Image (tube, rainbow, N blue to C red):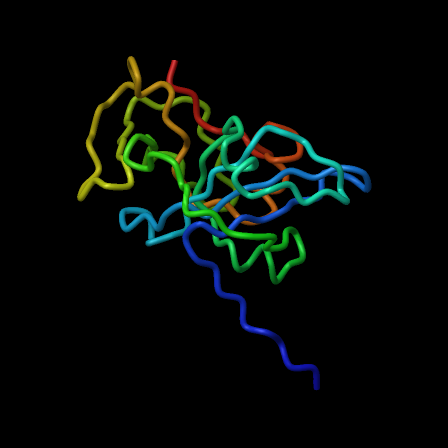
Length: 171
C-alpha cells in the first residue's frame, strides 16, 4: 500500500496552477478566515508564465491580483490541481479584502439557482462578525463572493477568469 504524504499549507505558501501544457499561473495562501469556516483565503495573480518557469517568489507576489477567494488549498494539492512552488512573507494587505455573501444562495437539489439578491452581508478577514447591508452599494459592489469554493472551482476561475457557476447579482 502506497503511503500518502501529508500536505500542510501555511500562510505565505505559493502554488502553481497549469493553464495548459505551455503555461501556468500562481496563487498564494494569505490568511485563514474565522468567519468562513476558518477556510483558507488565497490571492491569485494575473500574470501567465511559461510552464517550465519558476520565477522568484517576490516577482510573483508583486504581480496584479486576479481575485481573492476561499478554498481548501491542501485538497487542491491532493487532487493534483496545483503544486507548492515556494513561499513569501509578503501576503499583501489582508485587512483590505472585502467579501460578500447572501443566505439566499443556498439551494436544495432541484431548486433553481438564485439570480439576484437584496439580502447581502459583507465582512473583512479581520472582522468578528458579518455586517448586514441589504443591497450591495458603493465599495461593497467590489466585494468578492465569499463562499468556500472547491479546488476545481478555483482552478477553473484561474484559467478562465470566470466563475464556473452563476453568482447572484446585486443589481
